[in-house]
Image 1 (cartoon, rainbow, N blue to C red):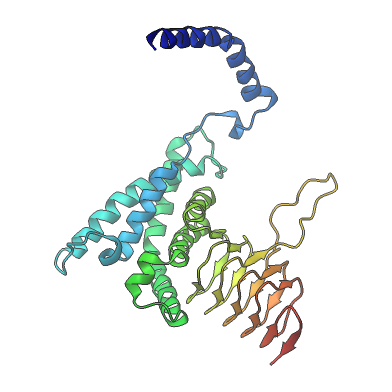
Image 2 (spheres, rainbow, N blue to C red; image 1 turned 90 degrees about the vertical axis):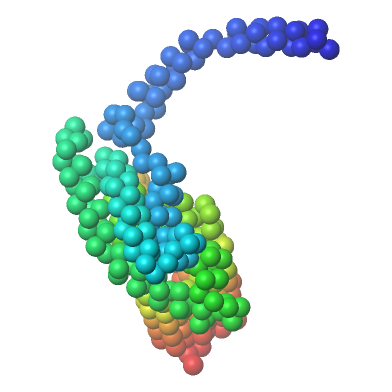
Length: 310
């Protein structure tokens, strides 16, 4: 047995000696630095940390709902101290992540780190000022889930067990950062939610209050989607683009309104696909597995078999 191990080590050494690491490293350097470079502005940057961002989102959720996501031994006397301490720590960490993200979206001279640091602090300060409004929206979402799901037994159950609410928390935080000029960081926060919940909401989407995603797995909401108040989505719903225009050189045209407008009080059932800049009228119901690429008036009831106005 010992002889076999010695022979295995000798074979490993033989393999390693044939790796030609110096040549391989040189070729990869050439690819990285010139022939296939994807480095932003050709410079090395500190990327935002997904791990730190996940901790920041958890901390913000704890500050917004301390008795559910915070310490279990909080009391009426200690909860404000917990919230203040948590916010102080989390916002400090967030400012650093915003600074890193700004390297990829800012028009400031990348060498002027002081200017980006100042901008990051300003964005973080304005983001912090929006947290009470964000919490108010999330409470409306929480009520929508409780009132819209007969299986829901308590707010605590929804906060702790519903992937839809978890994704919406990430979306509301990410959307605020997106609107304040930190889209790179916002995309990362949305992707963290996507990886844990299976729900993909672009932070650029505009979503009104009392929003409910039931079950949720496979839901996709595109960047320019506009969703009104009291809208409910079920699993595997896609609010996407119908086509992607190109310019005269065949390059994809970025931006532009290309996703649906969903008005107030609309329900979209499981597996429905709604594509293009179309409008789903107020109070409409879109049935399961419907493929919809045209606008429908308020009060419509759309199924696979027919479209009718009630």
